[in-house]
Image (cartoon, rainbow, N blue to C red):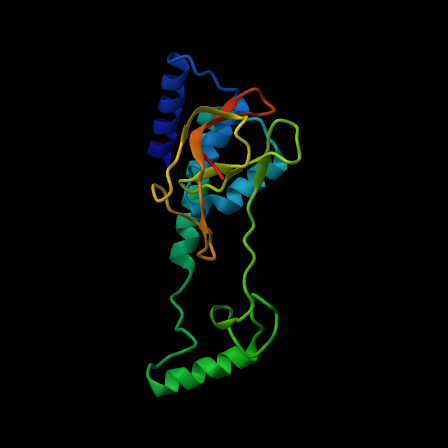
Length: 200
């Protein structure tokens, strides 16, 4: 994690030299969000206590956390799974285990989450733009950004039917009418550019 932290600090300094100046909180968040998932508890705790640290002090803290993570991994003994054998015995044992606990999806007993028939709900964060509740821009973290208003798009060009195949999580298709660039001004003054952004 030390080398990764130094590389991130180097990249932040390069961005500063290129004219992209970030405030200290954004630099800290940039380093914290680039960490692997094993640091997720530390990141939550760090945001909870809200301490002020320099970038080098943060790297020092991360090295300590990494050492603690490595030591706890080596102390945990390997455990034998509940299933044990495979084959017909394992299938019967799986049914017994499913009957013992509740499903994490619906909370009912008798089956596991992977076998649950209740459809899941997709949570998507919407970013409202232009101070209008009827305009929105959707940035799901995947490769496709979508919006429902042409007014916010720059460099707009029409999309012909069949040029683009957009699908929802449930498999249904969405037709995009145009594509362009959408700028979102954040509350701290930074501008987030979604390129490309598709009008649906």
